[in-house]
Length: 427
Image (cartoon, rainbow, N blue to C red; front, side):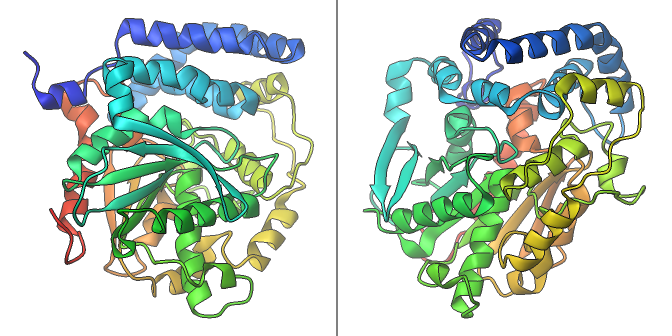
């Protein structure tokens, strides 16, 4: 009979995956027909290359990144989706309509799911609060974590993270609850709008019954980690009286922060140094540097014309030179003027933030150098790395080859949380 740990970190089954793929295809049929044709042509062009690229990448990733050929193949498909496909495809894949049926199966049925996860949707301070409580309400002094999902600022939903976050909650001190929040997405919303939503959610969370303002933590991965970092920066800047940050001034500072593969710089280098992780890890990671620049541009409202999916695919595979991005100066100007948008420009300010911070990144991801820079702020900023890729705790939880691999991210983060719980909290 499987142990509780084996159940918590069970492998994705064939039935679960096939049902999920069926739901994605069904939802995609409602997209504009031109987008359907473009996506289908992209798949037909790539599928003949997939076995070769998966084998080549799996061999290359033996050092330093340890992934199987199957995992490498899945990563290539995700890379294609992130780099070439329209964000509307990603919103279907990671959206609630496809994610929730998968979560029902992973929790062991709707009843077990509803006993652990409670949906919230209400208005607070003129902002829509939407998300999921994970974990039963308990009495006593315990930790409350706000988790912000990733997805390149343009896609993603907390529903896709519920099983991962439940496993993470189980590894944290007893009584820990997690609120997985949704926020507006680009290009419909700008980074300012996203951050306003996160700020309102944090303020709402602090007023909830059973939430101790001194035992609140913020966490996130990728774009969500960027917003978590900006929230911390805004609170410090608001406390210091910086113009434009007054709305953060009365918010409680996070007791702990967990940043998984954070995007610290919206002004992603147009021509990065050849030795940087942007170039060094580009063949390995599933987040493409060009796509990262586009996502960051979308987040600040800069929408230059971008090559179509098939053009970008052909240019990449044929090694044709990329067009000079015209958005670079606009992105840089925005990042310089905004006091919270690009936290990498305010590392000295972040050094004055209270509470410990865990920064997680993979040795094979394009954002590795940026994440490592955060840990140089002070001794309170600590590192958790693995020979893997972008957002590795979440990735390995879903794609790990065995229980040990699937559990390593949640167990490592949970151990760090237990070791750094503020005084007065119940363990």
